[in-house]
Amino acid sequence: GNSVTQMEGPVTLSEEAFLTINCTYTATGYPSLFWYVQYPGEGLQLLLKATKADDKGSNKGFEATYRKETTSFHLEKGSVQVSDSAVYFCALDSNDYKLSFGAGTTVTVRA
Amino acid sequence: EPEVTQTPSHQVTQMGQEVILRCVPISNHLYFYWYRQILGQKVEFLVSFYNNEISEKSEIFDDQFSVERPDGSNFTLKIRSTKLEDSAMYFCARQGTAGDETQYFGPGTRLLVL
Image (cartoon, rainbow over all chains, first blue to last red; front, side, top):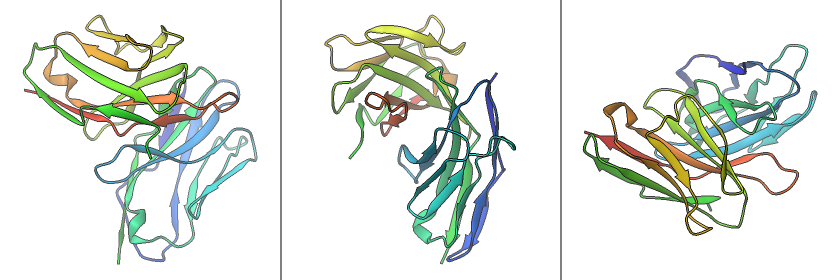
């Protein structure tokens, strides 16, 4: 079946530090890949997505590249801000119209 | 602006009681989903609903759960006899417009069963 594995948190960084959250997946076919973000007390918001191999999703300074050869979709941001403190979820849709989520990674950015 | 709205934002109920969680899409869509997130755990798929019928359901979605779209607008999740382990955040999502398979989530309903 489909599964998503994320690096375990929590991750604590200083402002302007580089952030990487690793995500690997197992899926049949050619899934679409997503990163969702959950800010404190809020729901899930789509951060970025990629629908085919070698696509790069980007938003708000975050980027992730769909790597089929390594079945990965790592999230990166070059310079984080305090406002980036949130829980980040990697997810996939294997064209069966349901998302499979990773466990989530809590990121805390300190001023 | 949320893609869907959900009511209530919080609900506290006694074990064995029925609860109805509501989801209202901002615009007219055909594909809807319910997910839940038990505190500290991953987000889990419950059910998908297409054109007023259940499309797929997970093993979590047993006989105590049901979904419907009674008035063609609101999309509801009913839990007939709540258990302590039903305490969770419940998210409604809708699919994007044609050609966009992305799921857009509502803000969630936090359910606490005592």
